[in-house]
Image (cartoon, rainbow, N blue to C red; front, side, top):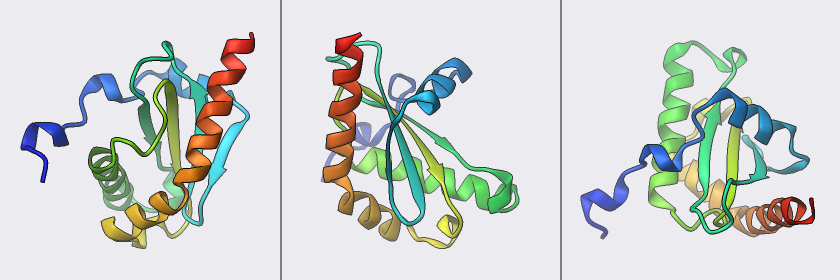
Length: 131
């Protein structure tokens, strides 16, 4: 099992600013699962590690439910460093029913879609390279 420091999810790995969220959400590259939508855009540098952000709307519940979804998503990001390809920014949007999932169920759903993440992330990086 990795050491405690490798489970961190530092600021450099997060999409934090509104312009970054807007840029990723405007990108046409997306993958969906039953409970989540994943939006991909090329990051600032192709050799940089991927960055991720989470969006949970009020339609999914009160603050407690929304914060729980975000907490579970961040934990999945920490545990699966190879989930997304390097050089992309990812925004995860929770869908209805996501607040009912355990961490293991979220992780299983995400790992099941990993092949799609790699394909969409590569497409996002290629689109930036063509510009």
